[in-house]
Length: 326
Image 1: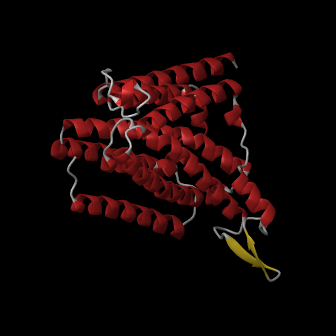
Image 2 (image 1 turned 120 degrees about the horizontal axis):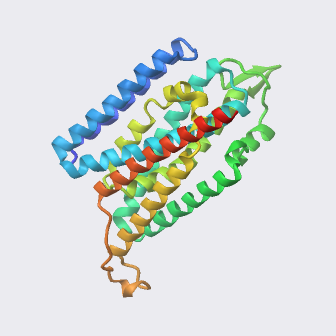
Image 3 (image 1 turned 90 degrees about the vertical axis):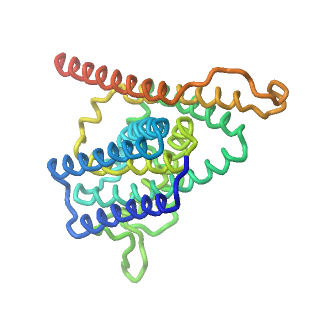
């Protein structure tokens, strides 16, 4: 894909502009957004993603357009699943509703930064070591297994603080009360961290774990860094509004993790097949490529759409049946 420097600069510039607009709007009036605000913002972001995909198809070719839509849908689905964790974090840390929007915005900015780093590292690894696809594929299959396992054991219903948060709580002077959006305050002459600092640490460290799943997944659909970056940007844009719009409705998507586990496993197998097709490892077929079938991106897009549709319908039907029983 021949992406000009101007395209990269415009893309990054627009992304920064949108984020700055969000920061200014949110900072001027901290509040819980209304349903109308969320619907309008989501409609704009989704519309922009669709228009961008059409532009990619028109100016860079059909194949790249399909890659963008497949990557965007996958990343968007993973982002929705991540909202479950965000809700649990906000609840566990007792974040006031009026401050949750600001915390989420910071979390999204951190997610973009971390994913940008992982995208760059992934691109370097792919360009220099074809065997990295074996690692990506195996990691996605393992992630799919853990999603199924957590679904069966319902581990995702409990939030367990990671070591970074525990360290912040135990080794840094911390207050028990929120002081607006402030991360640090002075109390009795001592500099102390606020609960909002703990929230940002929780969201930031969680974003890193999310990036470990999402970046290998999208590199299984496209090796174009520009598409990987833009698909992630559009998947994260509007995530804050989606958090408030869906709210308790997320709990009705009971099969979402199973659907995502199937998608991740499918992409993982796709990556392994690609690795075998490009094989350079001496202990596999003497370092020669294997004549194995590769899964077309258009087929991948179809599998993703069908899986998400079946997952959504099955989840809503089960939720409705449970509601009727109760």
